[in-house]
Length: 395
Image 1: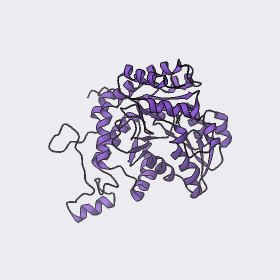
Image 2: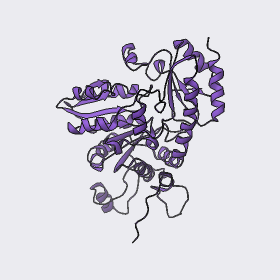
Image 3: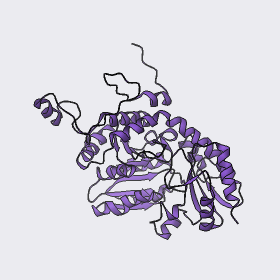
Image 4: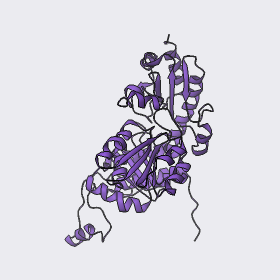
């Protein structure tokens, strides 16, 4: 028998994980159901005893949700996965499913504000300690390790100023200590960066962002080894219920068909806008991973195929100019979301990272003049014109 040639990512994102009903539909069916029926009482007993495969209740599993998980596994190169109601449900479930009182987390300090809440505030309530480090400093990771350290946690590129952390190097540090590396890969997307291939044990996404890509549904997903998913995560998900709704899973499943196309189009626009912003006299600094002026440019090129659709920049005029620019844009919209078809701009110091102390914001290079842009799918020249006219309003 001839071995089938491995298909390219775009082909797999159109076809992988499809489950067809007896009606033979072209588009994947939506199994919008909370429960399932059995042929007999004996079959129900066998399902609950895990002696027979099959669905029991959609909090435990659902055909549409599984199709989304399967397609994401193919994209990420993961053995197994579980989809969640939101990205933050994924972060929380990942931590709580494998940690217990007395354990310790080492996390990069450059995390999304809600992720910092989980590791800094929530987990310590359950007896799990956390140490934050500068994720770019490999010696800092090593120095923070304790005998009870079980998880190293990072996001790269980071939110909001796009710091790049060496995934492979931190994975080696984790594994030499007997710990697991968890990577939040939402900014890079699985199209541009594959943490599992670089040595990470678990990858987390907010599927709300680029995976959906059109601002419609909330969702998240945790991907990793089969033993972790089956032995630790699945039971936690079953009993606590942060499950993805079938309708949202169907939206995400269909969105994956165009994810690679969309991400590359996002990057085309982001690269052009980065060049324009970098040359503008009102802008002090631009952060973009594949810009040669980025301090981790070489590392970004090594572990990311492109620079993503996220740009951050600092205005010389501080908060006043940041608000003037954001308010002056006509195409780009003010929103704390990202990964959308629409270009979105946010002021991190007063939105996504507003709960951090002034000292913590300073550590993360979040200043009054810092803006983060999620570059959308509009015409590239229209976006350049929009930012040019808004920048012209600054003093």
